[in-house]
Image (cartoon, rainbow, N blue to C red; front, side, top):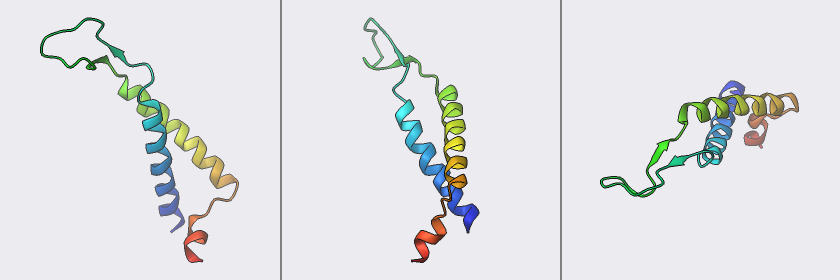
Amino acid sequence: MQLFSHFLCFLVIWRLLFFILLPIKNKTYTEWQTGNANIAQIKSYLLIKAVITSVLSFIILITLIYFGLDLALIFKK
């Protein structure tokens, strides 16, 4: 049960951080082009953002585990 709760915490932290990092360092077209939306991105760096998010989420999860996070105790009450 503890492994599953830690995995769910990791997913929640990962998703939150990923949506925070998404708008950072996006390159968009400076001039208007036919067939593209005005906000279409040239380079979005999704792989780099996913790796950074995974590393940060893992660090945060290890920190929470070190300080005694246990979701099983919360749901037993």
